[in-house]
Length: 68
Length: 479
Image (tube, rainbow over all chains, first blue to last red):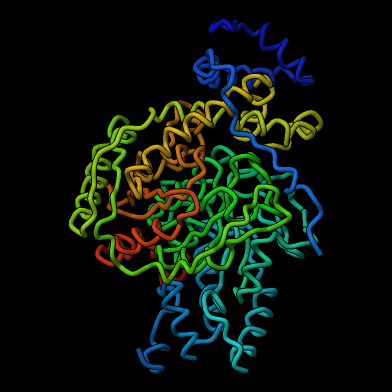
């Protein structure tokens, strides 16, 4: 469960997991950005029916070499 | 109109369809149209920053070739001989394509994007490359090699985005046709605040091959012009299946212009008033209400309809976009973050902490929102709502970041992927354009354009002219 009061330390861990080695200035930018998207993420993270399909249908024909 | 009249005309004032009619009758040449366009760009671009690159030499060669072909009886109709501008995230062989980014400052592609190849095959003359937000993402940045474009209606305001330069170039009569891209509203927002007309076609209708990605699953490419009729002519040239774009659909392309019969009598229109009525400025609400009354007067049957809250679409789109954005720009973010402008960098950073499960849940939410949106089309042929929630935003480098608390009324149709047209429907007290949005069933661009064209045949909002004298070079004004 994600806490709404994610700390700078939490965000530092997430940045490290993402492979980012940020200067203090860029880390501050990341914290600002995270504060802005955190409400969207909170609204997104809710229970869904197991059968709900994502809008992500793969059509293998689209990746075949073009005819002729 | 006679040949004599033609030479008294200011060719920059013509719509694309009006220019095409003169070309077909031999009353104007592609070279004359191009030179009028280049002169207008030279006069106004230093103040408006609509173009990053003007491809004058290449365009002159193309226009002369086109003129020779037309004189030899090879006129192709449609957009043949028409100068067209391209957003600078669309690759052009031999012409620099920067995506308005320091990272691609010297990038000269070796191949045309599919839309460019199709425009050229239809006979269009590529005039140049227009300003965008960096990689077509987010908001304007003042820390890039080129300044953001300026709104021709008032320099104190921005032209929206991310197809900013295309919107400004059309409003400033530099061109009569342009191509933009739209992931969350980037064709329709500049159309709305620049007083022009822009169409986001159905996802998969127009090829994305050769266009720099913003969000693979949401990227659209579409026409921008001054009228719905002109958008129809441009769409005709660029629509259709492309095997090089895996998202492209094998769907037949109808004759869009033939669909513009001027009548919308009996069309059933769902009015999604709550999307803007809860958030927009009163003058936006009044302008859209008046436009809906106009549809009723034209014979449409209009009923209010309630769809999921606008915030749901915005949250869902934001998470999908940020997740994909980080995947696209991860390498540059790790190796040269200082080369990004602040606006894009902040979004790429935010994308780094979107989890895989957040992304998949957002895609599941997208399915649900699309189904609930499309349910309305069992009862309605079209949906209408505001084109944008405000007049054009202030041109202020120190203003609020566009990231903050933004509800974008264009996003529902970005997520659903159905066609949506933005067109002018009024003006604010400050004299800035306001707009309406018309959306249709997937792949039914024809009905969307028909409604937009019928509206424009009986209104004149799209014919209003910005005060371009304010942008004249000082020496000319003094003279």
